[in-house]
Image (cartoon, rainbow, N blue to C red; front, top):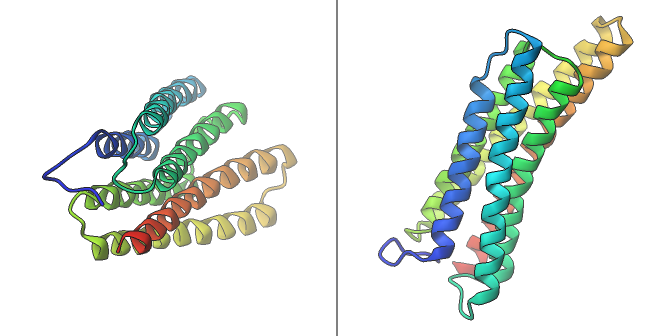
Length: 206
């Protein structure tokens, strides 16, 4: 595993990826649009975070291809990189769906789910940071917290769909909100996938 006393390019890249992810999620959860034009700015900003993340993924692939010995198995490093990238890709997809569905306001469900997602990305960043200190038990603790955030999103998603189909009479609005809720829940699921990958790496390197 990584050591803080001997940082390498892989550790630095992984940290940069998680910081970028955390910043994107924080922006996502704190954004409060007031008009439709704000959603366009929101979507473009999330797209910028995603593009920045793609560049880091490319840098990681190049580094893995150019290095004979890596701190952990290159397959695991690539898997973790891709799972982190999946979260950002899903975030970009969700942001775009707000624009496509013409949602100029975030309701309580969207705000709460975005907050849980932001919390999950904070735990992802902390877990990856712990890889530098070889603190395996703490990584497992962060993974459990990621799962709790994902479970909370699942609960919010189910409750929101139930209320939507019971109360919404406009089929277009129903489709729009259903699409947005599904995309948010997908982000949370990808956060859990990161957690599973982290747990797998810990088991291999314990």
